[in-house]
Length: 117
Image (cartoon, rainbow, N blue to C red; front, top):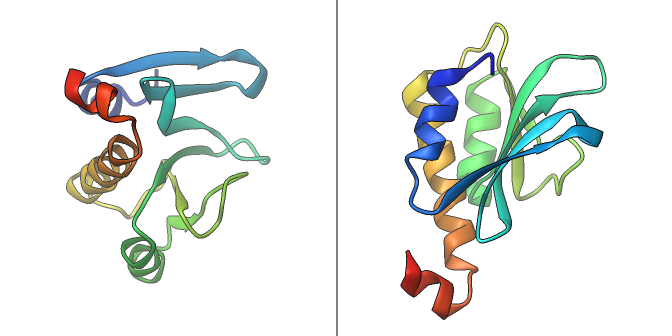
């Protein structure tokens, strides 16, 4: 993993599981089989992280940082990707994005799964 500090932060999330998706050449992070982070590459081989964001928060980030763009191969309204090489997004903001993604995915879980967290 090229970005161990990001992976370590993600794995601190309660119930977070790391899964390699060989056919996508990506690493997925899930909670109860629902993905909340993907780390991989875009079609040009640039390293990216993709997270789900509140729509307004995602739009704000896209305007504020050149490294943030609509989710690569994802729903462009709800998911955002960030170029990790030459990234202008501070680590703290990236952590906020990961937190938001985790919160949104956990909110969509069945009550029995939420109770286990």
